[in-house]
Image (cartoon, rainbow, N blue to C red; front, side, top):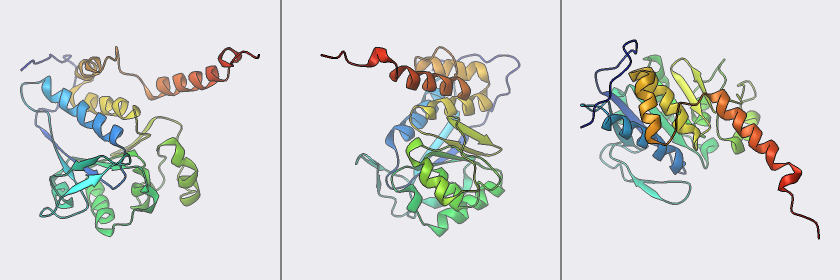
Length: 236
């Protein structure tokens, strides 16, 4: 296995970190897949697995079953919510129907994990779940763009950030899509140092780790360029 060196000043996590992914019906497959891929690439760059992860659903451990993504692709899960009890980081994967999710056990468990200092990470529409659990009080958040108006109506006291992901202590929220990779590189950098995270980024054809502000600026520039007369079809 290929081992990559870290910068001498990097703070490194030497013990495999336990991660749980909670897939909610209608989750965004791209966000989930990018998060898994980033962790898998990180594992492949070291002698020992850096991250171990389990895919969980709202069911119990005896009947994990499958969860259908927003595009209809089923993903098999290996565990129920009980598996999250020992996790050091938990990803909430939600998108379609995220605002309507009602599961008292899930909300209670998220509150308990957050109080223990476990990292809680919301992808795409996962901020709806965190808001319902009361984990976004006095905190800003990020979520997928098309859900912003609904979120603002349901939770007017929670400020929505323009950044592609938001970090508030042990609670992180992301707009999903390709922004998931940017946030995962940030998290890997926290655990393994910036040099190692840069090596992971290169495996995804990224020359460097982009800051949230940089990505946002490029998105704005693209939106402005699309409005340019140069994009308009010639008149007959």
